[in-house]
Every structure is written in structure tokens, then in C-alpha cells.
Length: 510
Image 1 (cartoon, rainbow, N blue to C red):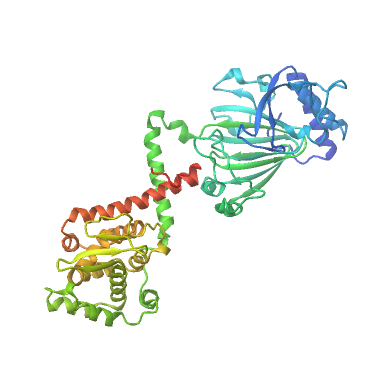
Image 2: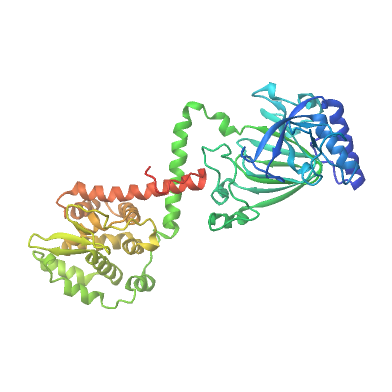
């Protein structure tokens, strides 16, 4: 069997090749016993053992069924004995499966011609000398060579392989749909701990978008290839693929490990797993925040209109609030700073103060803060409550405080926070301790990183000293920010498990 391109063949030439190959198989390996895939979901062959089983089958039996399909349009194909105990040669005295059903139920999938790890499993090793090794594989350390043969139209479920793959069609036709590794989230992989973890859980012919909404993107990522006799297709490690085979299609594939997997020693697996998961979590966090637009910020009329949100009375409100109890003890210079602020940070300051005051009130002479949520839950300054007052939001669009912080340039945010330090210290305290959601904490700390990049060390130190100096317990403030940030990262990790490993921990504590 030559895996190189044979050129276009006429129908009679194709038939001659098929017949020649079948008789060669009969002669060389007819006495071998192979494992056939018997499907309960034919003509689709899923990798999950719940949908198929491996049954021993004399290779000659399968070859005979192929001959019958070639010689007769209404042959009964592979037959089952009266007791249903196994597959046997066709016989007039045996009960045959219906001609429509039977051929679709059996597929010689991944029958080893060569298996480096377990030579005893090389069921068709006798065909090894018939395989002409493609030149591009001369220097590769192969892990296996396999035969794929079906006597009726079939489809393999969407999956990826852990090795590089060269698929060579000997006879018939295969239609292959390919997806790069980056498309795995759209294919909803089976859970990493499942028996078929490398397979997709989506029926791509009739996807249920209510259950698998990301599957809508699968078509965008896909590439389609048609292989005829003599064609070969390289499928890189990790590339998902779905293969449709025509009636009586024969193929041979070669698997070999990628250089990356070959070079990673087993004792470093856990380390690299953490590195990879960390990278995926970071990417997921960026996607959750649409971080491509963060950092460039918004300014001018666009930012002003977004922050205003129909409120044209920001400056007046701030002037009125400047006389409240929070401002007692501040000097005239700080009041002037409010009036000297640019429109965008001034509007942002108003919105933050308003949002915090919607949930927090100043009560008593000791200015103890209480925050009341929409369901009436009360939170005092110590954080004692039955329910979280701060929104448990992981979505930027749903969190007003996060959106205000998001809109500001780093140095604009710095000015807003310093204005709160001097004019609304208790509001800043309530904002950080009680009103900061996970997404707001993530946005805030990323803005802090940008501030660090744009200011001198002495200016940074003075800024953070002023901000954290507002709090009676500076460690409580820092813990509040870090706890929110870690909650956001935890949600991103859950998303990664769902997208790339098919694991859903919804409602479970990690």
C-alpha cells in the first residue's frame, strides 16, 4: 500500500484498486482476529464506550462482507449467529442483520499494524511489510500504524489525538473537518476525567445552542478537506477532527509523538500543568474583561457622555455634598481641588460617591457605616452580615462601580481616589470594604498596575500611603481588594475547566 499520491483514477480503476486491496488482505491477514467497533449509534461512531463496544472478529469475516457489498447491492453484509454471541462468516443457515442496519454497525477503527508500546496488540502486524513508509516519516519515531476500514458510510465523532497524525487513504473517500486547538471551547470537550476526554460532547449536525451556546463559533474555526485514494493529510497533535467515510473506504494512519511531548519528563508534568492552567486563567480573565480596550481608556466627549449617563448636575451635587459631615476638618485647599478637577474625573467621582451612598449611610456620631442591600440586609463597618452587600459580579457590564473605574485613564483614577481621600474618606472606606465586587477589584488592581508604570516611585508611595491611610485597618482594606481579585480569578478558573476540560463546578466550592 503506497501512501503517496496515486493521481486521479477512473471509477473502474478505483474498483480494481479496492478489489485488489481486499484480496490482498484476504491472502495476507485473513486468518487474523481483529477487534471491530460495534456501534449502538451507527452510522456515527462515538469514542465513548457507552456508545460502542469492541468485539473480536475474524478479519476474513469482515473482508467477506466487503466482497458481498461489492458484488451485490442487496447483500446482507456481516451476519450474527442465532444466539447473537458473535460475528461469523455469512451463511444461509444464520440469521443475518437487515441489509440497511448491519453494515453501519461495524467499523474496523484503529486496528494496529504496528504498536510500539505493546507489540502484542499489533493485530495486523503481518501487513507491516506491505506498508510503504512515507518519506517525511523516515526520521520520526512512530508510536503506531493503524488500519481503518469500513464497509458502509460512517462518521467518527469529533475528537483530537495526543500525537501527530498522518492519515493516508488507500481506497474510497474521506471527508475531514478540522478545528485548531484554540477552538476546543466551542466543541465542548468531554470532562477531563471521562473515558472519552478527547472527544466533543456536541452533536455538530444538530447542536443545541441553548445547552452549548459556544458551538455557534465552531463553523467559523473549521476547515474541510476531501481525501481520495492516494491522498495524505497531516493532522497535528491537538487538532480536533471529524471524519466521514464513504462506502468501503480503507485508510492507514501513522502516529508519532510531537517533540514537545517527547521532551517533557513525567516528573515535571504537575509543574507544567500549573503553568498552562495559569496562562489559560490569565487569558480567560482578559476575555471576561474585554481587556483589549482597557488601558487605552476613554476620554473627551465619549467618556464624558458615558459617565454622565443623563445626569447633568454632577458639579452641583458635589458642591452640595462638600458640606456634609465627611468634609469636617478638611482645609480650603481640598475644596479648591474639587473645582479644579477635569470634567471626566469629576463626573466619575460623583458617580462613585452616589453609588456608594446608595448602599451606605452615615449613622450616629461615631459615623458608623451601614450598607443596605435591595433585600434589606444590613452591613455594619465590621462587615458583619448574613448576605454580601457588595455585588458578587464577575461581569463588567453588570457592575456600575467597575464600569466607572474601567472608563478612567490611570492618572484620572489616581486623582479621583485622592479626591475621595481628602473629601470623602468614609465613602472611600465603604467603597473598598463593602461595595467592591470581584470584577471591580480586578479592574482596580489592573489600573493600579498602570498607575505604577506611569509614575515615579516616590509618587507611588505617597499615593498608596494616602489611600490606605484612610482605613483604621489597612490590612483589612488590602484583604478586601485581594479577596475580590482572587474571587474573580477563581471564576476564570472555573470557566477554564468548563471550556477546556468539560468540567462544570457550578454551585460547588473549589
